Length: 313
Image (cartoon, rainbow, N blue to C red; front, side, top):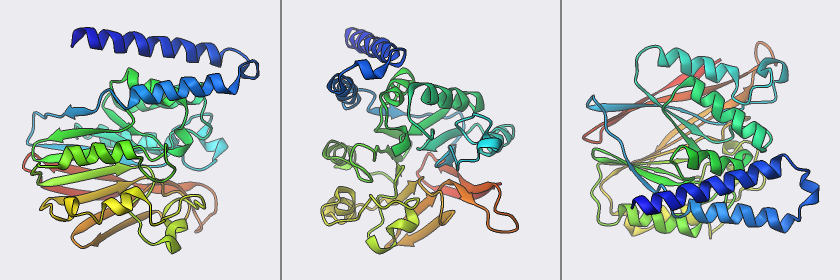
C-alpha cells in the first residue's frame, strides 16, 4: 500500500511539473494533442484514486456549509481580482467564527476562466476561509489544474464519504456536460448495492435530477447545452429498482443556480431536491450587485438531517 501511494505521489508530482511547464510556456508552441494526452492521463488517475473516505466527529453530528457557483457574476469592481466572490468569503468566515466546526462544500464554478493561475488562486482563497473544504467541479473549472489541486488535497473529482448511517456521494458533471458518465454510474451502484444507509446525499454542480426539459434553462444557470434526453444517465438511474427499493432518505444538492431562480427546494415521491448558487442579479431596489443562498446542513450519526438556507447579500 505504501508503494502504491509513493507511485501515485510521484505520478501526480510529474504531472504537476508538466502542467507548470506548459503554463509558463507559450501554449501555441505545443501540439493540441499533447495537451489532450496530459488531460486524459489526469482523468485516468482521477478514476482510480481517492474514491472512498470516512468522516468522524467529536460530536454526534457534522455540519456542512454548502455554496454553489462561487465565482458569482462578473462584478469586476466588487471582486477586486478575487475568484471566490467576496460576499461568499465574508459569509463563510462569519459562520466559521460561530464555532460551527463546519466543513465547507463548494458545488463548482470556482473560477470564471479556467487556467492554472485562476484555479490556484481560487483554491488559495478557499483555504483562507477554512482548512476543511470539499470541492465539486463545475464546467468553468474543467481544466487539468483543477484535478491537480484536488489530488494534492487527497481528493478525486468524484468520490464517496461515509459518516455514521449516511452516505455522501460527490459527482463530476463536467466530463459529460450536465450528466455523470458510465464510470460514475458504476461507482454509485457499487456504493449503494447491498448497503443499508438511513440517508444518501448526492452532490453535483449541474442540476442532474431535473426530468422536465422545458424548464431546464431555469435551473441550470441559463444553460442551453444541458438537455434532459431519454439517455440521460442520472435521470434514468433515478427510475431504477436499485434506487426505488431503497428505504433510505434521498437528498440531492446541485450548485449551478446563478441567474434565474436563487433557490429551489422541492420534495417529490419522498425525495428532496435542492438547488442553490450565487450570482443572481438584484432587480430591486437596484440592479447593481449579486446575491444568492448557501445551505447549512447538519447530519447526525444515525442518519437524520436538518438544513436551513442562509441569504448571501
